[in-house]
Every structure is written in structure tokens, then in C-alpha cells.
Image 1 (cartoon, rainbow, N blue to C red):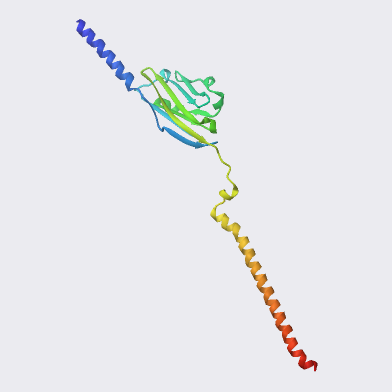
Image 2 (cartoon, rainbow, N blue to C red):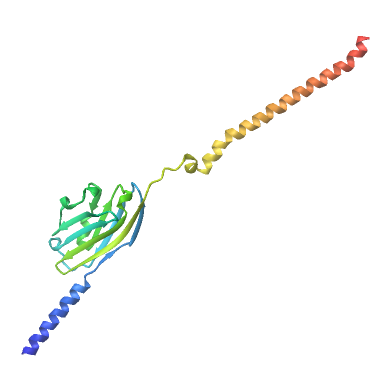
Amino acid sequence: MTCRILLLFILFILSSCVCAGSFVVNVTQSFYQAKENQSITLEWSFTTITGLSLNSLSVFCRLFTDVKAFVLLHVHQGVEVPESQDQHFAGRIQLDKDVLGEGRVRLHVSRLRTADSGLYTCDVHTSYGTDSGECRLLVSAARDRPESETTSGTSLRKDSQPESRGRIGLYCALGLTAALVLSLLVSAFQKLRICPKTCR
């Protein structure tokens, strides 16, 4: 009898360990890259069970940078706690609540800043397990390019057309001037040749 109780106790402990060990939080993507002022969606997935109640779900997402740590999102027992969010992300984070029950934490981050670069972690706590997942985001500065760089090849050709037309016009004018001068010289030469005979 004692052995049977001991065996049941060992099986209970082993099953608890297996259940706890089977709960995993994964990231959809381990590295994200974006530019300043763009928007991005970060996503984590976690192990779900049938009939998951959001009341037993807590989520805590943070950003770790070289300077400090920021709180992005805090969901306690299925309810979002907005006052926990860091001011740095005020009005820029949106949680997709529709997919939370499916085992996904989807965060939409808008108006990205270079200071948003860093390590994003998401801790998920449920009644059947706890785990966390992490990913990195690199936000590069939006560079104002000179107009010559942003101009397409088509517009460059259009811009160069007036210049080529100007050259053609210049060559035509020079040619006409040369022809006029030549004709004047020819007529003057003919007058000089005719004049000595008539003038005698």
C-alpha cells in the first residue's frame, strides 16, 4: 500500500514536470529590421491548452537597450494594464487581443524611433506553465537623400533634353552665322572682281 502511494506520488511529480516543461514561448522571427517612422509587428507564440481562459493569462513584454529597460505591455489575468507602460511607447503600442486566446502575443509598434532598437522579451505566465521568448529589432535612421539620388533615370533624361536642345540650337546658330559670313564674303569678292572692269 505504501509503495502504491509512493508510486502515484512519483507519477504525479513526473507528470507535473512534463507539463511545465512542455510550455514554451517562441518568437515568429528572431531579428527584425526597420526604418525610423515605420511600423512593425512583433509576434510571440506560446503553448495553449483546450479551453484556455484569458483570466489565467499574464503577459509582460519589455525592451532592453544599452541605456535602460522599457515596459511595452502588461496584461494581468487577461486584462491590459496601461499604466504599467513606459511613456516612451505611449500611444505607439497596440496589442492584438483577438489572437491572445490562440496562443499568440502580437504587438504593433508604430512611429518607430532609433531608440527603439534593442532586445524585446515577452514573459507569458499561465496556470499550466511559464516561459519567455526574445527577439531583436534594429531601427535605422531615415536618411534625407539629395534630390539627384532620388531622381529616376527617366526624369534625368527629361532634365537633360533641354540642355541637348540648347546645344543643337547653338550649333545651328553658329552654322547659319558661318554660312551668312561666307555668303557675304563671296558677294564682296565678286564685287571686287567685277568692279575693276566696270570702273575703267
